Amino acid sequence: MDKVTFTSEGVSCSAFLGLPTGGTGPRHPAIVLGHGFGVRKESLVEEAGCLAAAGFVTLAIDYRSFGESGGEPRGSLFPLNEVEDFRNAISWLQQREDVDPDRIGIWGASFGGGVVIMTAAVDRRVKAVVAVAPIVNGRRWIESVWGGARFEQLRDLVEADRRQRYETGVGGRIAVGGTEMPAVLLADERGGRQDQWSRAERGRPLLEGTADITLHSVEQVIEWEPDRFIELISPRPLLIVTPGQWDVMHRFDHIREAFRQAGEPKRLIPLACEQMEIYLPPWQTRALEHAANWFREHLADA
Image 1: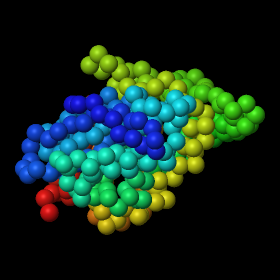
Image 2 (image 1 turned 120 degrees about the vertical axis):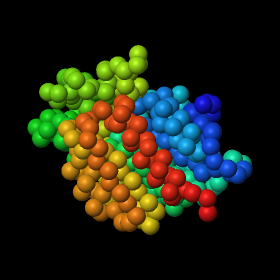
Image 3 (image 1 turned 135 degrees about the horizontal axis):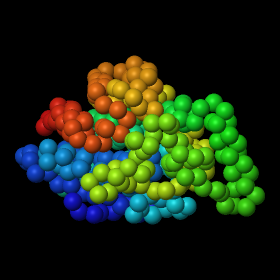
Image 4 (image 1 turned 90 degrees about the horizontal axis):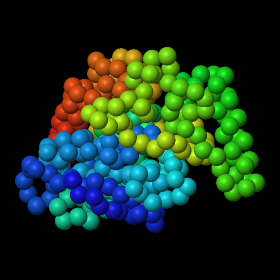
């Protein structure tokens, strides 16, 4: 894959560009891929490579203020900014001579799954969507991870940070994941077995990402509600692939409820795996096969 840059709202963003090894004709369908909560594009190499091998131009992006993309303060995880990064990545692809500008899909995992839902809801250039284990509502997500009383403690931190930013112009930071407060993604009693922030596979972290984000980001995430807009994707096709067993990070009941609000054509595929297993073979492979088939079906030559 080649490392490239595109511009999003005046900020240089880094991405991996994958070129198809199959398909015919001078112009190919294309797919923009976005990562999850605080993760970097390096964790999307396998997914982007698989879809490129299936005949698509792929662009795996780092959102602004993450990975090798520009933007300050670092770790500013503002969901609507990430939507804009997807939209600007689409614009960049549309200018390429090897891309059919009318056959572009988007793929996102975990928090990125919610981002692609929102992106497709507001941008008609998106012709097909695949969301893997999507976070469909920020407040419900964090509240379910933290629990009632601890969630109120988190809100206290966020409100204190807003006062601090107003008074000093500088906000605080919070760890992305861990077993002790404060951390956005608190591991539960089974988290040590499948903690995405520490578990190593194949000699590297399972999901490569940043250690902390701004507290301002948490405020933005709590207000994030892509499930309220999911019905706007129709009549463009939506596929959701998600673990169907134990998963405290991507609650199946939340996903199923959002899916019911979406219009046709749509498909929900629950896999017989747990939380982090969807990022490892054989479930990662099966999820990618479903994605490739969905994109082939809906981004086929006109």
